[in-house]
Each structure stands twice: as C-alpha cells, then as structure tokens.
Amino acid sequence: MELFNMIEGIRVDMTWFLILSALLLMIGVYGFLTRRNTLAILISIELILNAADINFAAFNRMLFPDGQEGYIFTLFSVAISAAETAIAIAVMINIYRNLKNNFVSNLDKLKW
Image 1 (cartoon, helix red, strand yellow):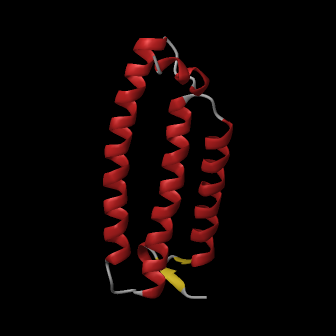
Image 2: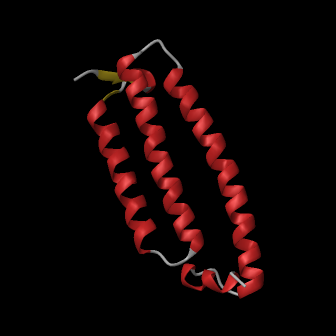
C-alpha cells in the first residue's frame, strides 16, 4: 500500500487514515442512534461528515497525488457543514424557547 509523505518526511500508511475515518463514522452513528438531545445528535452528524472529509483527502492523495479534487470536495463539505450547523443551532434555540428543553422525544408537541 502506498505511503503518504506528511509533515517533514514523516510517512503514514493510508490504513491509519481509513481506521481513523471508520472510528469517527462508528462513533457518529452510535451517537446519532443513542442520544436524545438534539445538540448531541448534531455533533454526531458532524463526526460522520468529518469521516467523509478524511476519506476524500486520503483517497485523493492515494489516487491523484498531484490533484486537488479531494481537497476541494473537503473544503465544500466543511463549508456546507458550517452552514448546516448554524441553521440547526438556530432551530434548536427556537425549540428550546418554546419547550424549555431540546429532547427529540418532545418535538411532537410542536405540531399544533
């Protein structure tokens, strides 16, 4: 497997990037499925998106060492994640103002 040149000659195998990405993905999915708080669920979604960003960068480096496409996808993904987080936190603040808590189980009270 190809080794990556990192900072000042340190070489890291791609396997470690994939292990980190898989670990972030598993933690994110676990947090998404087990948490009741909307903010904790949002953080879990961010972990899942960060796992995808690491994969973009790692596979770009492996497949196209001189290309920048994976890094550009990662940059767009980070920008979209920031916008999504800002909107989600604004929605959570409004939910908290109405219900005085932000648990997912209480969101059905907002219907009527």
